Image (cartoon, rainbow, N blue to C red; front, top):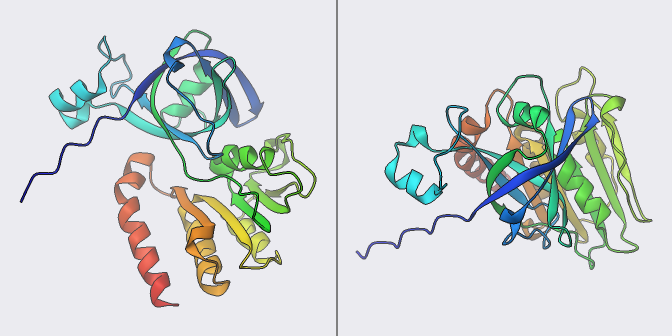
Length: 280
């Protein structure tokens, strides 16, 4: 059997922090720019994501930075630690983009970095990827997500086609975590306050309460894997929405950090898909 050609290393970019802004008590915006974005663009989709690269020991990367060389020459534990984030918005004229981080004190890697970021700090990342944007020929747009999906939901709402009918739900802890998001006529974001309820419970109720034609809906459902699984089953099995009309993914999973979740995500998705197909 012929050997498969090696996959090319993804393009790594280098950006500098331009400014930061605390949007809510637990959401920090970091605006990135600099000459390292000369080959970067994020104009096609509203769910463009990038993979931030952090040194595994919290120090610095060797210079000149070469991720292909690091992966070829270093043991896996010395590879960059990656964290996935959405491009909130991209300004091609000044070549700057914003990334919004959920902050939970000193927990995690990316959140503490964002909380301490200052102008001139360097950040390396891979990407962007992406696959979703609101299609103008869609009858009804349905969007649902928790804090982790808020940047992508907000980006989609702000880029809705003129006259689009849409229902957008975002679950946050309380009213202090709401944000101002521009939206065209036809719909708005409905903020759901979680309080002490389980993550996603309010979102499941809200989506189930929407009346929409299954044959005309385009849905974007992202966030904690548990509620995403339930809404996937509802849309695919109960409402029989075609797979091509759905953008559904678990960004994170309760009890797992990103490394653990990403390692098990493919198997989790395959199991969920098999269970739901058998129920059809």
